[in-house]
Image (cartoon, rainbow, N blue to C red):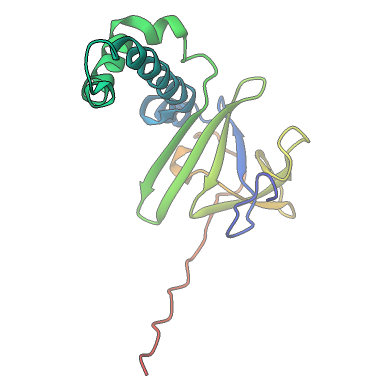
Length: 183
Protein backbone atom coordinates (compact mmCIF):
# COMPACT_ATOMS: atom_id res chain seq x y z
CA UNK A 1 0.00 0.00 0.00
CA UNK A 2 1.35 3.43 -0.94
CA UNK A 3 1.40 5.81 2.04
CA UNK A 4 -0.92 8.82 2.10
CA UNK A 5 -2.99 7.78 -0.92
CA UNK A 6 -6.59 6.62 -0.60
CA UNK A 7 -6.52 2.83 -1.23
CA UNK A 8 -9.62 2.84 -3.45
CA UNK A 9 -9.34 6.12 -5.37
CA UNK A 10 -5.56 6.73 -5.34
CA UNK A 11 -6.29 10.39 -4.54
CA UNK A 12 -3.64 11.88 -2.26
CA UNK A 13 -4.54 12.63 1.32
CA UNK A 14 -4.58 16.36 1.94
CA UNK A 15 -2.45 17.84 4.71
CA UNK A 16 -3.10 21.28 6.19
CA UNK A 17 -1.48 22.97 9.16
CA UNK A 18 -3.95 22.88 12.04
CA UNK A 19 -3.12 26.53 12.79
CA UNK A 20 -4.52 27.42 9.33
CA UNK A 21 -7.90 25.91 10.26
CA UNK A 22 -8.16 26.44 14.04
CA UNK A 23 -11.95 26.01 14.16
CA UNK A 24 -11.71 22.67 12.34
CA UNK A 25 -8.86 21.56 14.61
CA UNK A 26 -11.02 22.41 17.64
CA UNK A 27 -13.96 20.47 16.12
CA UNK A 28 -11.78 17.39 15.62
CA UNK A 29 -10.20 17.51 19.07
CA UNK A 30 -13.54 18.18 20.78
CA UNK A 31 -15.71 15.65 18.94
CA UNK A 32 -13.15 13.26 17.47
CA UNK A 33 -11.78 10.05 18.88
CA UNK A 34 -8.48 10.35 20.77
CA UNK A 35 -6.70 7.27 19.42
CA UNK A 36 -3.94 7.21 22.05
CA UNK A 37 -6.53 7.42 24.84
CA UNK A 38 -8.61 4.60 23.31
CA UNK A 39 -5.53 2.38 22.97
CA UNK A 40 -4.45 3.06 26.55
CA UNK A 41 -7.99 2.39 27.80
CA UNK A 42 -8.01 -0.97 26.00
CA UNK A 43 -4.57 -1.85 27.41
CA UNK A 44 -5.66 -0.84 30.92
CA UNK A 45 -8.71 -3.07 30.61
CA UNK A 46 -6.58 -6.03 29.44
CA UNK A 47 -4.08 -5.62 32.29
CA UNK A 48 -6.82 -5.21 34.89
CA UNK A 49 -8.55 -8.30 33.57
CA UNK A 50 -5.38 -10.39 33.91
CA UNK A 51 -4.58 -9.07 37.38
CA UNK A 52 -8.11 -9.41 38.72
CA UNK A 53 -8.60 -12.87 37.21
CA UNK A 54 -5.51 -14.09 39.01
CA UNK A 55 -6.66 -12.51 42.28
CA UNK A 56 -10.23 -13.84 41.99
CA UNK A 57 -9.38 -17.47 41.26
CA UNK A 58 -9.47 -18.18 44.99
CA UNK A 59 -12.76 -16.31 45.52
CA UNK A 60 -15.03 -17.56 42.77
CA UNK A 61 -15.29 -20.53 40.44
CA UNK A 62 -16.10 -18.24 37.46
CA UNK A 63 -13.65 -15.31 37.51
CA UNK A 64 -14.02 -14.55 33.78
CA UNK A 65 -17.82 -14.17 33.98
CA UNK A 66 -17.52 -12.03 37.11
CA UNK A 67 -14.86 -9.84 35.48
CA UNK A 68 -16.81 -9.26 32.29
CA UNK A 69 -19.68 -7.86 34.35
CA UNK A 70 -17.57 -5.34 36.30
CA UNK A 71 -14.48 -4.56 34.20
CA UNK A 72 -15.95 -1.85 31.95
CA UNK A 73 -17.38 -0.09 35.00
CA UNK A 74 -14.06 -0.36 36.83
CA UNK A 75 -12.10 1.16 33.90
CA UNK A 76 -14.57 4.05 33.55
CA UNK A 77 -14.46 4.70 37.31
CA UNK A 78 -10.65 4.85 37.26
CA UNK A 79 -10.67 7.24 34.32
CA UNK A 80 -13.36 9.41 35.89
CA UNK A 81 -11.36 9.52 39.12
CA UNK A 82 -8.53 11.35 37.34
CA UNK A 83 -6.38 8.64 35.80
CA UNK A 84 -6.83 10.10 32.30
CA UNK A 85 -5.51 13.51 33.40
CA UNK A 86 -2.54 11.91 35.13
CA UNK A 87 -1.66 10.02 31.95
CA UNK A 88 -1.95 13.28 29.92
CA UNK A 89 -3.56 12.12 26.67
CA UNK A 90 -4.47 15.60 25.42
CA UNK A 91 -1.06 16.89 24.38
CA UNK A 92 -0.10 15.87 20.86
CA UNK A 93 -2.47 12.93 20.73
CA UNK A 94 -3.70 11.56 17.42
CA UNK A 95 -7.37 12.18 16.77
CA UNK A 96 -9.77 10.72 14.20
CA UNK A 97 -13.05 12.35 13.24
CA UNK A 98 -15.75 11.81 10.61
CA UNK A 99 -18.15 14.52 9.53
CA UNK A 100 -21.25 14.07 7.44
CA UNK A 101 -21.89 16.69 4.76
CA UNK A 102 -24.68 16.95 2.20
CA UNK A 103 -22.15 15.82 -0.43
CA UNK A 104 -20.70 12.86 1.46
CA UNK A 105 -18.47 11.97 4.41
CA UNK A 106 -15.26 13.77 5.36
CA UNK A 107 -12.71 11.67 7.27
CA UNK A 108 -9.99 13.53 9.16
CA UNK A 109 -7.03 12.71 11.35
CA UNK A 110 -4.82 14.99 13.43
CA UNK A 111 -1.12 14.16 13.64
CA UNK A 112 1.69 16.17 15.19
CA UNK A 113 4.62 17.28 13.05
CA UNK A 114 6.12 20.50 14.43
CA UNK A 115 2.54 21.39 15.36
CA UNK A 116 -0.90 20.00 14.57
CA UNK A 117 -1.34 18.60 11.06
CA UNK A 118 -4.88 17.88 9.83
CA UNK A 119 -4.91 15.00 7.35
CA UNK A 120 -7.94 14.75 5.05
CA UNK A 121 -8.32 11.01 4.43
CA UNK A 122 -11.52 11.22 2.40
CA UNK A 123 -13.72 14.06 1.22
CA UNK A 124 -16.09 15.02 -1.58
CA UNK A 125 -13.78 18.03 -2.21
CA UNK A 126 -10.32 18.07 -3.74
CA UNK A 127 -7.73 20.76 -4.33
CA UNK A 128 -4.69 20.82 -6.59
CA UNK A 129 -1.63 21.64 -4.53
CA UNK A 130 2.09 21.13 -4.17
CA UNK A 131 3.23 17.79 -2.76
CA UNK A 132 4.19 17.65 0.90
CA UNK A 133 7.74 17.32 2.10
CA UNK A 134 9.26 13.85 2.56
CA UNK A 135 7.87 13.87 6.13
CA UNK A 136 4.41 13.18 4.67
CA UNK A 137 5.19 11.36 1.40
CA UNK A 138 2.63 11.44 -1.43
CA UNK A 139 0.25 13.75 0.44
CA UNK A 140 -0.85 17.09 -0.97
CA UNK A 141 0.07 20.28 0.91
CA UNK A 142 -3.26 22.12 1.16
CA UNK A 143 -1.42 25.18 2.50
CA UNK A 144 0.31 25.46 -0.92
CA UNK A 145 -2.34 25.37 -3.69
CA UNK A 146 -0.91 25.04 -7.21
CA UNK A 147 -2.88 24.78 -10.46
CA UNK A 148 -0.69 21.99 -11.83
CA UNK A 149 -0.03 20.20 -8.57
CA UNK A 150 -1.18 16.99 -6.96
CA UNK A 151 -4.92 16.38 -6.59
CA UNK A 152 -5.58 15.89 -2.89
CA UNK A 153 -8.64 15.53 -0.70
CA UNK A 154 -9.54 18.88 0.89
CA UNK A 155 -11.50 20.11 3.87
CA UNK A 156 -15.00 21.42 3.16
CA UNK A 157 -14.83 25.03 1.90
CA UNK A 158 -16.66 26.39 4.95
CA UNK A 159 -13.76 25.27 7.18
CA UNK A 160 -11.15 27.25 5.24
CA UNK A 161 -10.18 30.56 6.86
CA UNK A 162 -11.87 33.77 5.69
CA UNK A 163 -8.53 35.12 4.46
CA UNK A 164 -7.98 32.04 2.22
CA UNK A 165 -6.41 33.29 -1.01
CA UNK A 166 -6.09 29.98 -2.81
CA UNK A 167 -8.61 28.49 -5.22
CA UNK A 168 -11.78 27.01 -3.78
CA UNK A 169 -11.88 23.22 -3.42
CA UNK A 170 -13.61 21.37 -6.24
CA UNK A 171 -16.59 19.16 -5.48
CA UNK A 172 -16.05 15.70 -6.92
CA UNK A 173 -19.19 14.43 -8.61
CA UNK A 174 -19.87 10.81 -7.78
CA UNK A 175 -21.16 8.86 -10.76
CA UNK A 176 -24.33 6.94 -9.88
CA UNK A 177 -23.94 3.18 -9.98
CA UNK A 178 -25.66 1.65 -13.00
CA UNK A 179 -28.52 -0.64 -12.04
CA UNK A 180 -27.81 -4.21 -13.00
CA UNK A 181 -30.36 -5.84 -15.26
CA UNK A 182 -31.89 -9.05 -13.98
CA UNK A 183 -31.92 -11.74 -16.71
